[in-house]
Length: 235
Length: 336
Image 1: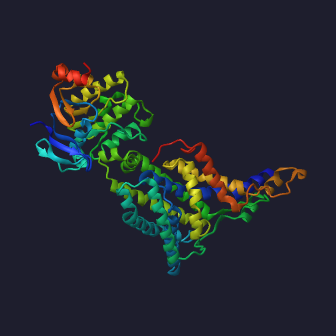
Image 2: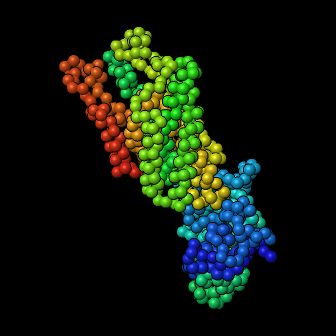
């Protein structure tokens, strides 16, 4: 049994059709899992279902052996699942430090040592700690977003397209940061458009098509699979 | 000597009244900007909510006077403030629970909420008329002046007197204290930061575990303090007349927009911008120039740019000019 499991999830938005059906995603601590697939495959939806942002019609979400399918997103955050949305993932009007403080809103203890840990992980944030996040570059903002999500010391971190809209150089840098986060024993699920790069740092990957698991395997396996290459990786 | 006279004249009739009036507007403008920033609608009931809170202070002042409670040289209204604020907060939370909440939960468009607030405005006006009536009331008691014109003339030997009313001093002191506490709260405390975070990015605030119900309640509590204190200070300084409070909504909104709506510090400064503009444009400068200019240049007319009857035109013009050229407000700064 993996640490965090989305089991046979079927879900859609409101009364609309099912976006994902019988979709399963698993992640262990200290592991990076990439969810790939064409547009409209339900990648983000699968992730949102695991966070509780939409209701499951069937299936379950299990964290460390406990069924959390009925919990609200806020309660799941309290259980240590952190989420970085694709857009609007920082408080643009607040300073870097305030972003981190709000990230730790649920913590009652002294957060200064956690902030120091985040600064160690993302040194640029220390340098810019009193700057308004809205004035930072795209890559720096993504680091703030990651830092904010890490403030609750999550066991699982979910990233919705962390490299959307950043330059290739910044993308590499962000992936390096994600690898460093992984080393702190956090399970990471990420939805990615840059499939090749994502798989190269992932331990495993899932390819979704029309809301169902189509392929799954280790990053290397998927990269080598001729069918996956042809359909999603561009030859 | 002539120059000093001119200066004292200007200080007495424009600068001191403008600082006072500006402080009163600033409190209202912060109220508007706070509601706009956190609850995301333009609250047209602003003027009447200030009036509602002031009404309690007026009634309690009468009651306290009748049973002989007072605080000497200070106006009795100051000790009624805590009670008036509590009554105001209850009224606001009541209105929120039964009116605004429905539209907030169903995620109505901001313009719809603004229209709802117009309804709240009419109802609040009606309640005020039923309880206290539409008449002009003075509830200022205690020592009226800190510095009288005659005393000042004696002290300095100038022709022009300088008056400082105690209400002016109270207004400025209370405003400085209140606004300092508010900015400290918003910028330095965990709850204040979470409030700004909620205002900035609601979804992410929810994901960070911030409880929206608490934020909404807190906003109304702060708003209740601002509305009541702002209203009472205005009423002490001038007089309490419900219709005047309703009219004050225009300069208050102008101040909030000049400061960049959603930006509390901007709204604070915006209050003074509007107050100074209104008073400088409507002041008759004849005497001022008589002091400064040689005799043959003395003006015959009042040298008044605009009659005081048109003072609202000033805030309205500023509002339009700002919306045309700097719609995000003339002050840089953090939004709530």
